[in-house]
Image 1 (cartoon, one colour):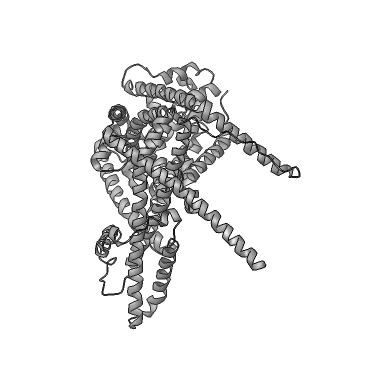
Image 2 (cartoon, one colour):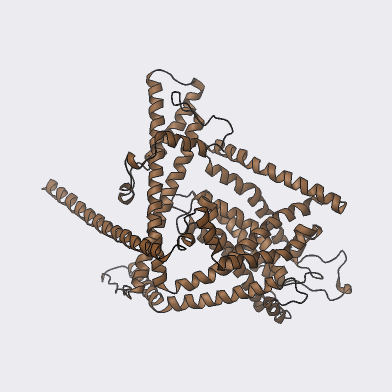
Length: 612
């Protein structure tokens, strides 16, 4: 018995919870709730195909002969409505809403209206390019097909672009995920990786603090220049005075919010010998802002009053610098926590859970919370000591097996016979389309989605738009990845049906009705899905040979995969450097705790003396 369509509400709620967890996991502290909500909705819609496509297949009716065909052809099944809502909502999010928000977040404007106006201005440029491409494609196909196919061409362009990304990301993920899971089973290897990356993370944190310090110096210089003009009576126009003062106050308020950092960050501030010159900073600021305005309005002569555009560029750079400090601090703290965990696992010194003792007169709620905490500590100890390594080995082997099945299915896509193991599994349960059929359809699609999306989130060429890890990603990175995630689910589902060679002709499969327009575009819509698997196989071989890491090293991008390609002598040197940095950090933390206890004792004794 097929699952009823009413289960979509439950699955939709579960997907929303999963998306909310993902956003909360990646979002850096200080990310606005609006951005988190928008990213959550986008992630949930982008993941909805994982559940909707298997349900669609489970309720699809196969017509054996023409006598069963209703009048007017094969009507789509009950999942057609959710598919159309998902398709067009994700289409609007990917091509309209999310790009507008992303460009607005990058803006340094001081009001909501001016930020949205800036975002519209930047987004329109991209839309103009897309419109030119779409019109050219429509005109070309109109001459080729002797008819106008506007909607099919628009769908094919978006999905062909997605198919290309799916092929690239899937080829990388099919190799990366099994390797990553297998490495996790060996704590000593992971400890060495953490120690190697410690030096890079420490340097990145220094650079982030220094960049923040440089921007603060530019803001202080601009504020001093404005003060000099005010002293000499060179006031700006009256109608601009209030707006100018408002923008300046907001900039200075944001600057003061990080004037004094945490002790661990504050000690990383440095003097002028490590700082770039003021002229170099001015040039960098103007270079960073050249894409914001085509004219020279963002630049100003140092002998004149700073313009509003220049203040906006400083505001954008300050926001980026503050976000970078938070992100790099979270990354460093994560490395410290991992090093402590892996060191305990290697040395078999995982702390045993302690017995929680509560007061006899404690309330039932306090006792319940204490018992839950004790149970959690015991479960964590059992997981780390007895289960963790075995689970990661099993997960690594299982994922490698699934990767081989996917590669075999992709490699035999052009064969005359259906050689896909997943198709054989679906065929075994085709007569009774219940829970087993649903699982057989969902497992390969879920694994392919995991490979694609995990590769997307760690793609280093995205730079600041990459999702960096737990509590390390800025709002603009969340929006950027949400934008690409919602673009990829339909091309991924389209490739999935081709991979299992699921014949949707003579059925009422709703997904095939939604994507049927692509069949009217020969190269982009249909034939490309045959050649895309070749890209997947090529990317798998490229990843197996560390091609991605070598490319990053060639481009000079400091990524973990690229850094680990160094020779053994260099890596050993980085390990020693990492051990030293981590030990110093631990010593400083102990000193800070001791100093805090001493300060607390001093304040308590002073309070007692005052009372006496």
